[in-house]
Amino acid sequence: MSGPVKVVILGAAGRDFHNFNMKYRDNPGYRVICFTATQIPDIAGRVYPPELAGRLYPEGIPIESESKLKDIIIKEGVNEVVFSYSDVSHEHVMHLASISIASGADFRLLGADSTMLHSSKPVISICAVRTGGGKSQTTRKVAKILKNMGKRVVVVRHPMPYGDLKKQVCQRFATLEDLDKYECTIEEREEYEPHILEGIVVYAGVDYGLILKEVEKEADVIVWDGGNNDLPFYKPDLSIVVMDPLRAGHELKYHPGEANVRMADVLIINKMDTATPEQVEIVRKNAREMNPAAKIIEAESPIHVDYPEKIRGKSALIIEDGPTVTHGGMGFGAGYLAAMKFGARDVIDPRPYAVGSIKTTFSNYAHLKNILPAMGYSKRQISELEKTINNSPCEVVIEGTPVRLDRMLKINKEIVHVSYTLKEIGSLTLEDLLAGFFRDKHG
Image 1: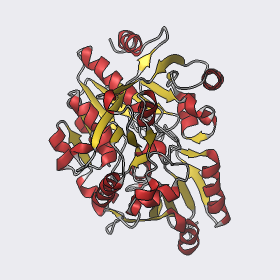
Image 2: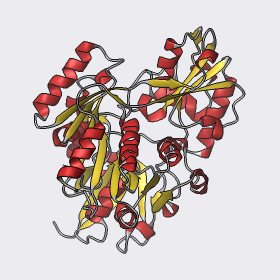
Image 3: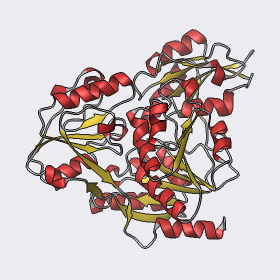
Image 4: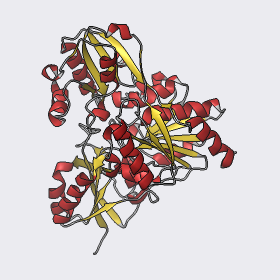
């Protein structure tokens, strides 16, 4: 082969950019033709800007729809396709491999060691088998325990750069005003706001090498808060992975969730209060077979409702965390559990009242019926979510998202907010685990 290797990076505005920064930026042996985009609405058609792409790409790198993959490979003579996103089945990955191979390109996955950055500070990572498994409340609990131990804790969140990439290179969130400053989407606010309210600083962005340099200036310990079921970008000194028995068996079927399980130091079997004993046993058996050296924490995910009396006997519209119930594949979340527990008279089907991209979301995810995903990846979509809620003939809105949507939306209905935490029920707790970690390795 003469000239650089021509590469297409398959992504979803996160892992793809990190892989580029780690492997291909300023590397004359490769020529990245484009990124492709999927999972997240409205991220195709953008450009990874030259300020981030480096000296080899003075015009930046285009971001195309993944649906164009075959045509791009053939037209551009692509040599290599690099898969770089998460929370998909092994079968999905291999379909893309088959398209790539049949079109004349090699297909590649980059491993953890070649894409993880090393920190001078202890790194504790929280990842998962699937999105919506309980990763966020686990991260919040870990950060709170570390703070109570007197550690200066900084959370670094997996990227969600769905806006102007040049403004999102390195973002620091310490106050709720910072969320407005960076024009955060609902999905970003769901992850950042709970930490901010606990006094924990959060970093996110696009360039995680630059972010690491800034974080190390103010942290005693870094907590990596994973996105979807992706691998951490920083090499963890302690790897915690959450398993979800409501989707028992997915630990063997989803990428890169299976890799997370196999690399973990600690596995948390969550949601034991809502899963069946049979589901829990499947997950426990797979955990022991896949990673017999890992410690196992058993946990529940109890819900907390601010005004449960407002649910009983009412017609309810249930709003759930978007990624959990869309590409995460869950048919319900904390909001639905609250409706059942506290006696809602009936649950409104939101589909007849959906508008714009919210209506499209229901078309794309046919398993969604009596819940409304909190989709808000852009100002337009946030407006469409607001209209969908206000169109609904419900008496109460049950909000099962980590963020208070009424801070962003003008909702003409009474709202009840549902939160959820992690509660260990076995002999091993996160507090004991973290105390032992610092005593043995980082005293």
